[in-house]
Length: 219
Image 1 (tube, rainbow, N blue to C red):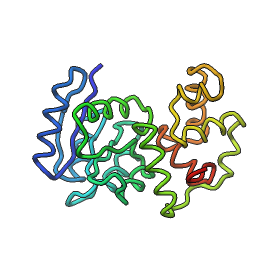
Image 2 (image 1 turned 45 degrees about the vertical axis):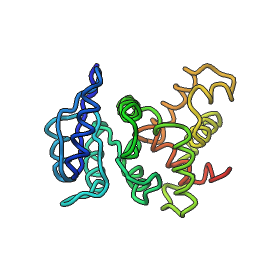
Image 3 (image 1 turned 30 degrees about the vertical axis):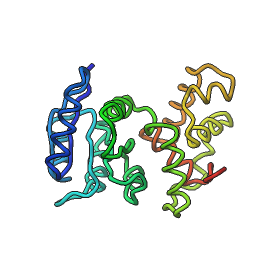
């Protein structure tokens, strides 16, 4: 199954470079481009891609607002935020508004393709290491507080435990090893967590875990 991608960036060289790299992959196709956030919103509706690579700083409508508008429509497309800095102040807000992950603009061709596949599949933020560093750093910086802990009462004790491990950056396989259960069991727990909390994907689960204080930086 081919992953359909739209690239939203106001720099032509970035769009051309990413298009060339992604179109060289047998299972990925760039179906459109956008030079600003407003065009990205339009392309999302017209082309219905699986993933949008979204730059943050763009004219007319920035990537944050575009992400918010696009994700408010439903489950697709997934938004993968592009940033120049690995701790860009805007990235955390993008995640809170529905982005499924982030990617540095200097990522390698392999990292770019893998990130698109991961986000299209609704899986992890990107890598466990990135999850730990990014979310923990923004929590230290005093990220906006989200829903209170009452929402977490809907989870079973085991589901809360799984959510905490996801937020600490562990993969499903690592969680399975930690809890001594099958990896499929972990996947089932994660799916139920998302459903009970009304979350879009694993990324939002990580953000919520930090915002509610279920997991604390360095904890």
